[in-house]
Length: 565
Image 1 (spheres, helix red, strand yellow):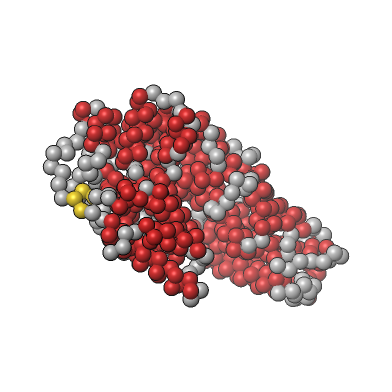
Image 2 (cartoon, rainbow, N blue to C red):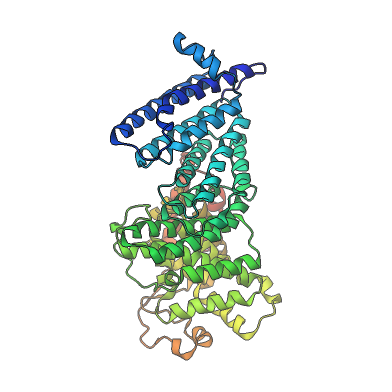
């Protein structure tokens, strides 16, 4: 990124003055009318002008970034130069930023989606212009000015609709963030986040009793982008966490008044709310009160997904748009959201159990009671819910289950009543890590190439490797259960007595017809040893994306334990 050396302050001011004058002269004929409605001819003329303005700003930005810091007045005609110098050049750079924002924010209120879109593009182009000159203070002014208008709009419009400038400003802020992340300049990104965090504290969110789905969607997109690949040092995290519960209130309010045409948007809002909850839960160390409140929120707003049957058809996956929350098949849509709801519910419940809070045990009991009566092969159906997920959710849930708080030795020091002990016994039986690992391998048909694809994938590589390392350690420590494990094709008999101990008689499952077992050890062994061979081959050719030595060491230990043919 180019920087301006000391003594070039006047040249910096002239750069902003040129930009301010150019935008004012180009757009003032449209903004001087002080009306949000325009004719078709005016719209066409304005769109052409906005496109020209955006292209010119990009040209200046590229010139400056390439090191061309010449006099910004050199490329202006002599007829216009005197006017520019007399009317604009006396303004400071900060004053120019404010004038530019005021000019463009007006266009965000124009009743034309095309005009709002191109006006937003111009604002993003201006942000790139500011960043190219390493003007941290002016970037602060730019973001503060946008947020000030956002705040005023919310004050003015208690229920921002999709045509209001508020939604457009949020979209601009998100696009600016995307650019800053692409720049990979941590200092500039920190300026953006600190400034935005400070501004959001002053937004009167209490004025937003109801908002449109479009407004809610844009804000969720911005927040999800902010928390993506973030940590607890991000100044925005706490602000987002505090604002987050309002999304659920807005969503519920919109559901009541929603018509069919907004159904797909509503599905997207659900998806984004759950994504945000998952990312926040991985960043913030939730205390007991927060976890209980999240469980209550999930139970209130997503109960249908939480208790929806796990045995619904897992076919029709090809009818879904890949990686999209907008799904063509209703079953796919429910499964897509159900995965996230269940994951969050289990994660929060396990947190509470780790804290020995009764609420966690009760939550798990209610969830299992609902599902076990509907599902004979619970563990298999549960894993099938996640096995087709494109991202790393499969391994996130498997890691969660192999790290259950009650799997550890400190459980011996817990003071538990009979109900709580029974819940732990049931969970350890249903989600036994050796059992789950065998089911996982059977679901991928013991295909080592599928495992290899998971390991080298950018999305799943890290979590898959962590899961395999953890399972291999457990297997080597519990070799006999792994060696002698059998899978029943109909109903697993191992847990029947323990389930009956915990569940009421009305929730018992008939296990009389349990037949047809097979022994999966040989298939699992062949799969893992072929995986080891493939990893060694790729590593030898320097084609494996990371150092697999620890994983190979665990696989070697596994191989040593395997009985010779």
